[in-house]
Length: 223
Image (cartoon, helix red, strand yellow):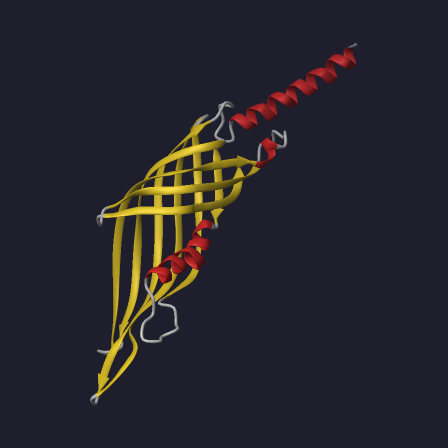
């Protein structure tokens, strides 16, 4: 009987430890590949569908580059969490036009820009679920900014310029956080998760509408 009670006590004690660890799993860090997809495919794809080369030119006006971002969440309440986002991505854009040299005109590249963008944002996630956890569907109102570092070259004037542009915005993001181990019934203190955002809609302070599909695809750990 004594041994049975000891075993029961140990099992209960371990269960309490895991439950406490779960409740204290307030932090979540992740790597966002949504930025990679945006810079490499989404941005150049949309831009090249809008801005077409002219006069028989075949080179795309926009070329995507590398991108990566990092996310951090702090769950200060079971269904609310502070969300911080920081990343970097790049792309190239150029403009074609007619240049006249010694009376002869030709259609060629007249301006090229290599752009590096540093996006960042902070907001609060609100989760909507029945489990009273930071998991499942969420809405994320946030404020953010994009810093554009532009290295431009004017071929007609043979002149290079360096400039920086800062764009602030407010927006709302909606998506899902999927806790992988909880879905499989495990209650571990360190667990992997997947973040998938479906939509980011807002307003930029340069008087433009901010709209992005699938802006976030992050994987990480909660602890």
